[in-house]
Image (cartoon, rainbow, N blue to C red):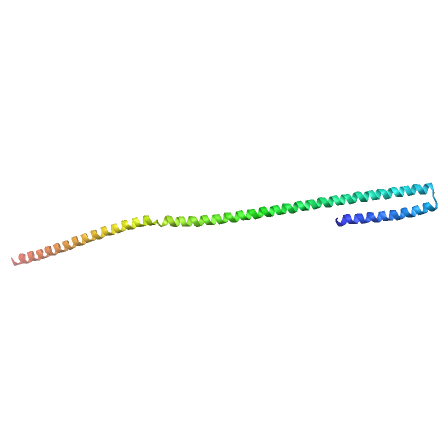
Length: 173
């Protein structure tokens, strides 16, 4: 019960108490000196007490109903807060799962790019064999060119010697 309602009830109860005291005094007076006017005042006072009692009962019932309604609303709010808390926890878990999946996807993409950058073992072996074959070819070609160069050097030497001999023989003549 809130403070304003409690004060209202206290004031009403004080008024009821005063009415009952006044009614008791009137009754005592009427018993000593019975009169029609006293009886009528006594009946009016009794009716006021009865109405006050009825009003207090109705007020009490209204306060109880209001308290029950507020308790029900409070319970409803508590349930809604708990449900929202659970929903929030669920959303946080979903968000963490999405973050984890995104991180994993980024790692997988990075690994995939590295795999694409570097060939697999069979491709690397095939390329290595091709390069070895090319190296062998180049070595053979290089050897052939060296042999040809050596041959040309010898020919040049022979030509140079022949020219010297020719020049010498030409000068001697």
